[in-house]
Length: 116
Length: 114
Figure 1 (spheres, helix red, strand yellow):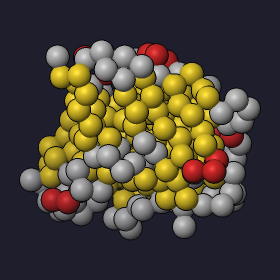
Figure 2 (spheres, rainbow over the protein chains, first blue to last red):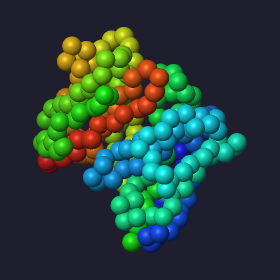
Figure 3 (cartoon, rainbow over the protein chains, first blue to last red):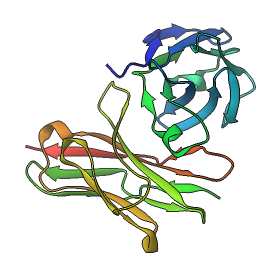
Figure 4 (cartoon, chains in turn orange, cyan):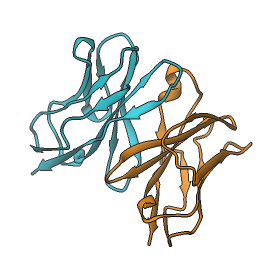
């Protein structure tokens, strides 16, 4: 157990639907990162939050949004889902931001999204 | 542009044989380097990291990696592979410029022959 908790583990939904993935970071970590892993795109960085504020943005589609709440948990919202959104979505956390140690990430086990 | 290259998509080795997984990066700023391992159905686990100092770093599970600045490489090695090492291995690099973004390579899948 890495200490990063992601729910749900598996999710099957239909095209056009909206889903929310949840992440609780490791105790004491202030930064949360979201990654998408698919067979054709590999591991893609989506977005990062630090202590409730967005700090870095990667290849995140406009249909996707995220936030980090005061208790530091984060949610990734995926809307108007398409078949190509089927992937494993990872959350990771780290102690801080903007320092070397901030990039030592602890990953959760992932949420597998299947869009039919 | 910042990039991380793992030139081998798959590598197959026999149990007990030595292993080297390649990783190259491009970009001029000082890199900080990581190797992560992903077992089937699992998240990524940090194997080792290099920030500064001795360019040969030791990690968990008997892995080591060597940073070679002149070759822009950070290859992962293990002297004797065990069947449980079968997994996907990701090299990752962060450049301490304004982005602080950790960029992953495409991964190398290791298969271990009994």
